[in-house]
Image (cartoon, rainbow over the protein chains, first blue to last red):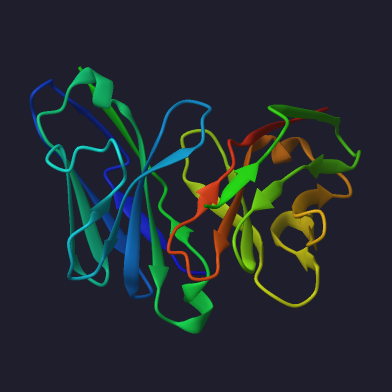
Length: 118
Length: 113
């Protein structure tokens, strides 16, 4: 199956700093990427959807200036948490969907990034 | 609008017994249905999907699910549960023409040795 990687897997940062999380599709071209946030023992909350080469579409209540998403190529999307605060501590998961028939109907998920803001 | 209901918070089952995790959905048009499993501090792993064709879908690790259009259900099943099946299970649906998945709240499965 298709593989999605995320980097870093864990990050600890001080309050006020910015953190960048990378999401890569390793063996397929991801025309659409999704960023989710997950709180302990809860479901995934969709933050934004991005199509390659266009601006991300943010879900209601998600601050686009705080969570910057870039989808510059068909294999890479980045999420930057700007001026992070402790309440931004969470598990962030990216997901990708491709353009080929086998990949179109399915989203492939990255392993997640655990962000802890001190 | 599309939505998924996973009515139980936790499913407890003895090792070797059948495991069922329930899922019902609501969507406009034909549904694309998915089951994912998540282990602690890990991303979601794909188990199986229903797009079209046979209502009984077989997936990874011995899991299967049956699409029931009249009951709008897509219950996940495994004939004989293993302790290693203990994890968080998510059902998801995407309507034809919709760009995003709707997830259920998840079910914690606990397989008791």
